[in-house]
Image (cartoon, rainbow, N blue to C red; front, side, top):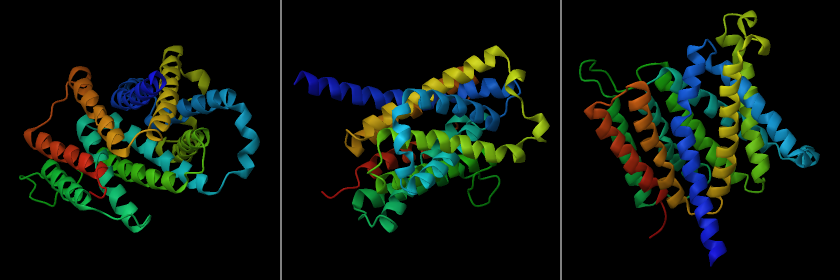
Length: 297
């Protein structure tokens, strides 16, 4: 009984730690951005550190790398875009709007699971779809503009695409249930590293403007090391948690991220939400809970 309680505590702790990490990680990335290190560059260096540390700690797993299925490449690339676009969105956008647009991901997961995985959508799933769309409409609608409610800047489009990428990552992960925790975690880390490297020539004015390691100060390296350790711990703990807890409970625990982000953005960035954003955001949160309950009975 004691071991079961301990394991349950560790599972819940792991998921809450992941939610806490992603709810606050925008702040150190913004500090790096203000120091002149762009989101793409900081992601490249951060995940380089993550891959390097992971390669040392999980060295024994490299022997089976050639036997891994090709699906892991797609998992890495999609997860890579998801993480990079989220970081870029959260650096320049309003934290809570970015978070809520990202949290439309249960909507995309339901649609992908229905058409790709052939999973049946029950009443709770349809309620989630309607609530998500209504919440997004209320949050994005601008009566003065009078146009169709759409994301209003690049950061919000990136946040929307990150949510779609997260959904696709979840679906690919479900189809790749034979992959180990270590393999999936490594795929994510390497994926962000590769996608960041591909985007560097397009986001920096020239490759000469890409800061070499020697050009980055010790304080900024320390911040990137802390981010890397946080990302490693969050990835492993979340992957551990989602394999040992019901999807419903996991999704509700993940919503703790929004609470952390709301508090952090208010105190660290002086950001507040308008009434329509509170209403729309509340519907999106309700939709996430219903999406997690999309099961018979």
